Amino acid sequence: MKKINVFIFCLVISFLIVPKIVNAEEISFFDTRITINKDASVLISEIIAYDFGQKQSHGIFRDIPVEYNARGGKYAVRITDVVVIDEKDAIIQFEKTRVGKNLHLKIGDPNSTLSGKKVYVIKYKISRVINYFSDHDEFYWNVTGNNWLVNINNASADVRFPETINAAEVKTACFAGPLNSTVACQSMQNKGGEKVSGTIFSQSTLNAGGGLTIVVSLPKGVVIKPSNASIIFETVKDNLILLLPILVLITMTILWYKKGRDPSGKKTIITQFDAPDGLTPMEIATILEEDVTTKSISSEIISLATRGYIKIERLEEDRILGLGKSVDYRLQKLKSESLEDLDNYAEKDLLKGIFAFKDDVSVNRDLKNKFYTTAEKVSNQVYETLTGKGYFSKNPEKTRKFYYTTGLILIVGPLVLIKTILLMFGIMFVASVILSGVIIAVFGHIMPAKTLKGVSAREHILGLKNYLSVAEKDRIAFHNAPEKNPERFEKLLPYAMVLGVEKEWAKQFEGIYNQNPGWYADSSGRNFNSILLMSDLGDFSSDASSAFVSKPSTAGAGAGGSGFGGGGFSGGGFGGGGGGSW
Image (cartoon, rainbow, N blue to C red; front, side, top):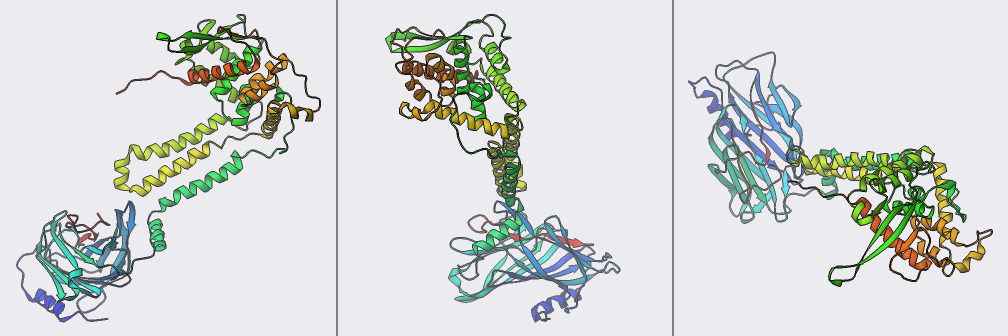
């Protein structure tokens, strides 16, 4: 092993022969040799002359930080080739453990004690301690650390560059004193003239808790920056939380494949002339969309009207100052007797909600800001009914809510505690958790699953849609198609509306359906036809949908940065830590 140079040897001799009267522990000198390699790794050799005084101790301990909260997450440096020797190159026993974010070196023999003066030389190789900027690369290093329990009489750092550099291209700074001190160290000198091979920093008298921090700026190209692939790999290795969104995506994909995917049906759509199994407009829309929409509720009201439970009346009034006309719709209850003849619980809840207080209501005046609770109740009833009848494996709304809620917790949780989480874990942790929540919430939309019965019903519904939307010239292709008559038009009208083909269905009955039906009235006196009726019902559906969801408003009240430009301080950068005796 290479011998300590003459300078260090002389320091050791003077340390050993100069008598001391005081008995307090101290570090007589803390000299560090630093070699920056071309590959951006750094060789560190810490020569610590420790005076135990009269205290009987086994040795010293040295804590070297290896993990930082920096660059948006966790950032770990890599320390290898740790060796501890004395001034005569003799090996000194030590134990190496990870304690928190530090590499803890417990140096000395647990079976023997010593007092007085002892020299320790701690050598190690460290990587990932160079900061890369657009116009320079930087070595920002806390030489001694600010956590020593004893005073340091003299501290120095001898930094050697990978190659000689023009003096004008080297920029240096140093800071000494307690943590966060911006006071410059006592001495800073480049080695060489116009071409420099390194820089020497020194500081005398550092009280316990004080430290020496240095900054060296090198021109681009002096050290080799790792590849982007290497940087990404190391970043992920330090922050395994970055893998969380990928794992969540894989898990949710598997869950969807096993639990959220609909079984395969016949995959052949056959034209149908009626709704499957006597399902209501709300129910067929829910099977198609896996969601109860306001449009399906308004279509259900029209269905109840065509069956004689409700009368819909279009009201047209002049606006104030004659600025156009306003349109509203009135709903009148036609069957005041019990609703026992209705065997569909969702339809019963719908009628009870509309006429909760009176038998004659205005959509905009009486239902707005009030009907939303009924809409929620009706929706829940539809989900339960279809699940109970075997069209869905589980209640689709409950399935969605489970995943939406889980995702929302992961999204909102980090935002509520943003300051604490950023300080403890960094932005990478926050972003990974939030992105995972978003993935879960997005999958929640497709997790409801139909049964084979539900898939068959869906294919039947698409066959009905085909029948309702086909042009007259193509109807000859249908065998045994029902005869077109007003009763047929009214029966399937709500289904055409909920399937979005009401205009095509109305056009088929143009010239046939010319009389105002008993369940619909228009005060404007316009010439009635199926196209006009469909337009009015479309407006009704739009107004009703807005009113159904309207709710009343409520009132209510470190490391990785640069050491230049004012960013440097004692204790900043990589390195640091501290130590003491044991």
